[in-house]
Length: 162
Image (cartoon, rainbow, N blue to C red; front, side, top):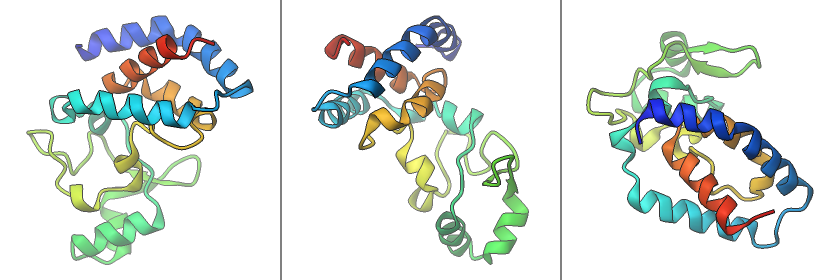
């Protein structure tokens, strides 16, 4: 799936997905977390993020204090040096990247700090999180960015019609 197709498909399905997630929040199935873990695992057995890396190119993660400290140590910098060089504070008062695409993404879509990457990057697209019904707003935002998230939600709607 091309990213241009993904944006159009996601836009076409946005209202349908929002209605689906609103119903899901009101009455989440008992096996929701189990099902989401299975859908996530199945999708990522066939998805190669290195072919895409759209998340790294278009959206920046939030950096927690623990992320800053871990990455700064890895780069042999003081946390404040790391913050000044790479981060800014956004409108929600969170640390985010100063620029996109991510500074740490190389030409082959590899992350140069993969072993110490932010928690938000490790968990993206968050489709295997516990209590999935609580993060559907995040999922709605990730569908146009991540082909895997799009496919997971489409499969979810087939397997769990509400």
